[in-house]
Image (cartoon, rainbow, N blue to C red):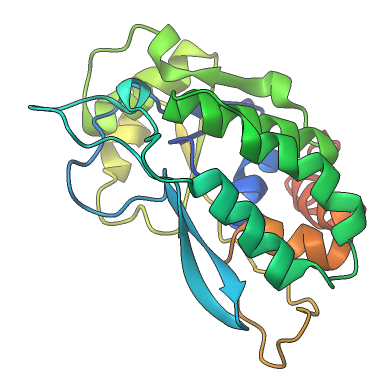
Length: 243
């Protein structure tokens, strides 16, 4: 299969599908030099959790008092809203009785309390720290801003894959709308679709399973070991050894 590369922006305590992609890839590139959306909602600073047994947005407050455009690695968190405190209170109130809260929360709380105002650095630190506890090697990760790639769109993806010695690009299931498979094939890069199958697990206080939540929902309910087993199992299915 060669060297499989995945590329994604650094998201805010992302869902299981994100960590599935991280587990499957040989190299994972945080797309931190891309433009940050000025007004639209983004997974870089918000994610859903079960609040009152219903999916609700939990948001990292960010500074939008700037003119023009900024890259992801130029975005800053806001000190005007106590979003760290709010998130911790939300987790205590809604996951405090979950089966693995005592195991997970002491690991998670310092990640939430990280005082950096650099949005990308905050997210990368949390993702890489959680990856370790899930049995995924964070050493495979690199930031796109360190690779000096100036191309755009599909050409940028090809150049990023090549920059880290990749031979295959692992893309998410929602990328069919903007990818150019023919261009990727002509570049000699194999295209692999993730086809993530979301596991169904017991969610404390929720009789009807809700998929697509932050990975925190899974680790609070099932623990790091079980979630890591799911994720590294998908890596084995692709013909890799577990990370």
